[in-house]
Length: 168
Image (cartoon, rainbow, N blue to C red; front, side):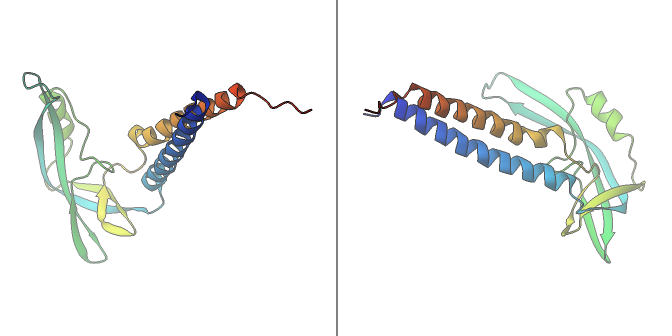
């Protein structure tokens, strides 16, 4: 049976390891979103619509309806035509609880409008309208720091709780 000190030690080590993994992933997400790989290019809006998304949070009686603008745009890189509907990296557009808010965001774009898009230099088929890191890109960093700090505290408590051997 593991001792309490052994359990604290291994819990601390596991949390420090998980925290380190999350920090590395978070640093990658933030670096990638803010990277110099993103190049501005002219684009043309090809369609605009408001999408409806219904989610049930495990409760069949409770459904959340969210609305979000979907802006599709076309752009050309080195003579090759591309199309995207990404607003930011990993998302099409922010969602709204009210349909009129989503419509208000969507009417800023009209079919045929000239806009700027930002594509990944290493993957021209990946483009966004809003480059840069979003606050959600920092979540992995924060979770990693929290796990790492908790693991360090557990590991430190374990070391302080261990009886010191007497030198005779």
